Amino acid sequence: MADATMPTTNAEFGAMPVISFPTAEPPAGLKCEEVVSGDGPVVHGGETVTVNYHGVVWGSTTPFDSSFLRHEPASFPVGVGQLIQGWDKTIPGHNVGSRLIISVPAEYGYGSRGIPQAGIKGGDTLVFVVDIISAR
Image 1 (cartoon, rainbow, N blue to C red):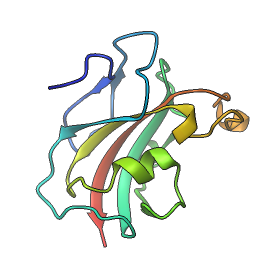
Image 2: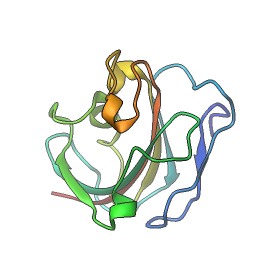
Image 3: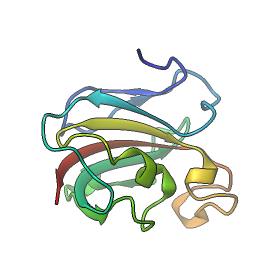
């Protein structure tokens, strides 16, 4: 069952995400929901994933980063400490072909410093929609 405190997005793998926020305040802790369940192989920590992603600060409709807008998927090793913890802890265990929506509190994102040049203030909760394209 979906968590009523989580944002929602369109359940269409590969489509530009449209994010809606149910409340002004983000949920506590790191949360991840599968919007679309893929039928590809399960992603394991240590693999390189290729994803399309769209990231916004909680409550914003303007992305601070979006591979969807660049029309260029990104590839990263997952689960090995090269990404924010919010991704390292949530993407492994999901199948290729899945669309995830992830609510990442500051302690699993960019912490108390944020990334001011990207419009992320210290303490901001981030929301990502991630389409898992492949893993190897």
